[in-house]
Length: 275
Image (tube, rainbow, N blue to C red; front, side, top):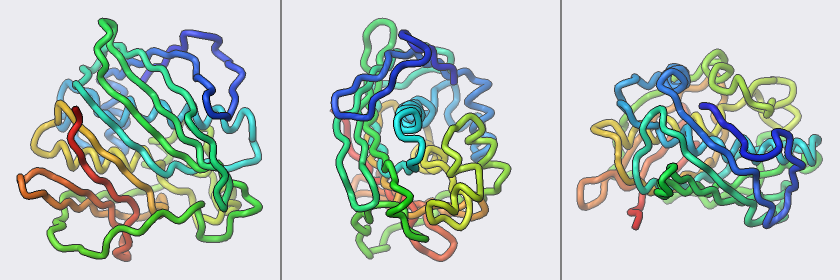
């Protein structure tokens, strides 16, 4: 992915509701998508000549992190929720303009929850995607071992109807390859990760999104997509997860889960129609 800011290359970031990020243009090349997919064991043919929405949706997480570390370098950063509405597919090599802003920065027991909204448009003005991320700005003084911020509501215990779809084996090499350009050392530095209560570096939420969206595209890539993903537990860089899905009465996928080796749910996702 290449991202070209349309303003100062080193903006004076702010972490506050209403702050608007500099406009940018994104281009996902076939080579970049193939490289990132290789760290997720996703075959190139899965998305064909379409952009995997993960790679457009990961940009907000990067710039939110840039703002956090520019303004509060002593704090940690943990991706908690990603909501994607895709209204039309984007082709590899196409240029997409993106604009976004913080909508809330709310205090929570382990720090502050940052919320934002980003809109994506093609050069002709076509609105192709909206992404709404939520991320924890963690206070290390308030993080205890094994905790990663406010505890989200646990999914229903009902496992009926869920069937395994894919299995993904993570390794330090795959996580480091995927997160190679991040400033968030919680994915790359064991000592840093331990400062925030993790036994080892954790896979990026975006990498888990790749796994979940691959399950949606197993038969064919969707032209329209609505999905809300919640990251409930960390996935460490040496774990294997299973992606399982449950179908609705219409036969289409309705829910997804990324399940850790001990059976606990690392991430859950709900699919919904987009207008």
